[in-house]
Length: 270
Length: 305
Image (cartoon, rainbow over the protein chains, first blue to last red):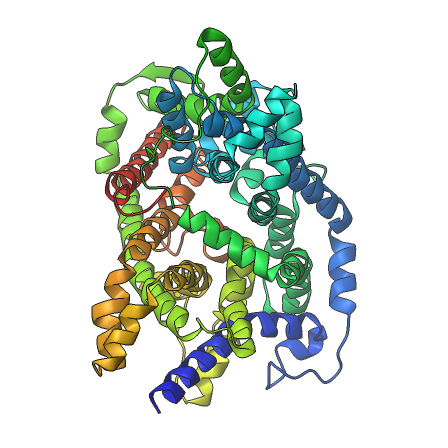
């Protein structure tokens, strides 16, 4: 009895949580004339893809997709490089000032670049990089979170393995490449998922630092697109644009669901 | 689980012995790539904000004014309103979403297929960009023909102007943010539940403890480290989630939904008031640092790093 009541509550809540998504999908296939007149928002008389076509034709979505793609993977590629080196140093080397540098790294966890929009904008201006994809990427090329996550994994690699390889005359980067990086594969996947979803979603910083179609990511492009409509009649087009932005993320989420959930779990425990 | 290791540096196990400056130079060269970006986009802008906060810069003129701009802030009604809103947002979202997260985690902990589906239903809002959520909820909250008002109409309740009414707009935001964040926190509780000792539960069951007693006296206290961790994330987040304001309200009506980071954005990029934007940035930095220092000082003893 007790279980049934609670399970019913949880199920009802689950449905309630899904409604915004289901409604968005439905509306994106509803013809403009039906959007506000229909009495049941979860029923379409004449399903159509015209909203998608209209959104696609009104805003340069291909360019936006391209920009987001470059930004997201440009950030990830450099991050993987910087966090690997830093994680190895923190996990396996003793050096002068280690504590101080570790605390300096911690600072980025407390003060993420996302909130430094104003000073970072002035820095980009000084560097002459305003309105470039590079400006969107640069502040995130170092990741303290990634370095710590990876350091934890590197520390679990048996040190004997490294010592044996060293005796065989292996250089440090060969050891890193053949021992540490393969051993940390799940951590890399977890970090990549978090990094990609975070930067795909990022809005405030790109809004501030970009101002033309050539550098704007999808989120900013969609927001500007959505802002150009005022009335409810355009819901169909705006929801179609919204789906276009979140679809890759939702797809990745459902494909990598286990890894997604585990990556967030890991980031929490460690 | 590493117990005897210094949590901060990790020294004490598995480190190679140092061989003077060559080793130092090697370590520094590995840290250099990260350091360049940390210095350029974290330390330097932080110091720059502090420095600029002592200068008034209007119409191309910069003038040293000391703490004057900080003093002005305390008389700035919008700033006080923004701080109040941030506080209200934290009080409104954090406890509710944490309790919801615990409740959901407890009931969705099993390996059933239906549980996996429901977990996804609660978690997916976390993956969606805030700006897309803003689009969706803008329509949900639209007066009369929005989804919420249509739903309420079924029960004969007449909706209000959820985003246009200063006395309702914060509640509407809080409701939306609980939807956005509860599933995220649920994940941490699912992880926490899996680490709980099962024998305690069996003992409690043999003693004939009621489910709610088990929750109150065993589960909840044992999940305390998780709760502390989630609490810190949740409070920090409440200062970072602002993208929705751009689409939904622009901080309005009459700044009733404005938040600190959005106020910085407006001050800097709509009004081009550099001095004030710097002061506001410093205030935000101090708040986040205070939360984090509490985090590391307090959680240090409770969570294994």
